[in-house]
Length: 203
Length: 219
Image (cartoon, rainbow over the protein chains, first blue to last red):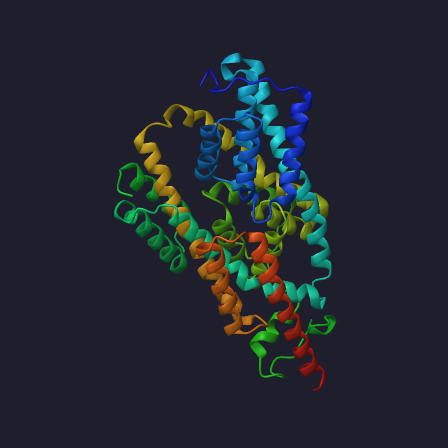
């Protein structure tokens, strides 16, 4: 942990480039920040060599396991870029400073454009919610939105595609869906149960 | 109530009263009491959301706090989804803006991100030490499977909101089925699905709304 897997030097122009790249990704992130992950990976790992593939993948996995919006994987990506640029936490204050700078640059870049656009567009939509085109859009998209949720559940499950080995995971997903659909049990109990079953090697 | 909106329709005047319901203006329901209520609510909500916050958002905002009806949730979610940015953060900003303006939107945004950001960084520090332990990887897998179930259940619960949809049940089911096939099975890009299918559906809904108004006006 004291030494990052990569040692890089980032100039002011590099930090600015990182910032503007994330500003662009922000405006492309329809359906969530996670939809820009392939492009982010191409830029950071393949193009600029600021991040290793393993760092990128673990950033996503950890953010998914952590509470909070999935967009926080962006913060972990920035954190790792900062670690690589600053020599890691073993480098003391400078290491921490660079890591936190990475978080700030990537998160602000990712949030500022989309949040600004959403604020004004959603406000306009709400003020004009009785207009026929606005109503038509919301009514028309509703079934698509619901199907997207079901699709997300499917895609997350289908990633485990070895039936003989992965059937307990599928069963866990189906049982969870039914329990949440039909009961009001607190969701944290279910996540705890999932973690326990997984840790014991049962799922 | 119904008289101040262009799209109100009196129940029972077109043989489709359950659809006409969706033209009523938003009913009175509970609201966030203050900016700190907003901040705390979204912070707690975000901290309960493992593997994404959506399942918790639906349960907390619609079922428990009732800041939104199921129908309002689906409509707002559609807007949050079509705009760039994290959907749940977009939704929280929209709710914050609705009750407290710009300050509300910023407070909702801060509530959604501040504490969860600190938690995820702390987890990164801790996990760096145990990432190779099989039990830790197993726990991640198990929680991932549960998260998939949570999102699926959210979709199942919201199907009820389609009963009041102006397009009618058959068109709704068809749209949902095509979307599922395109996204989940064929893995077509979301942007295209939203543009093409969403565009066609919106045009159809626009036409239906016009037909409904014509029926309402002739009586």
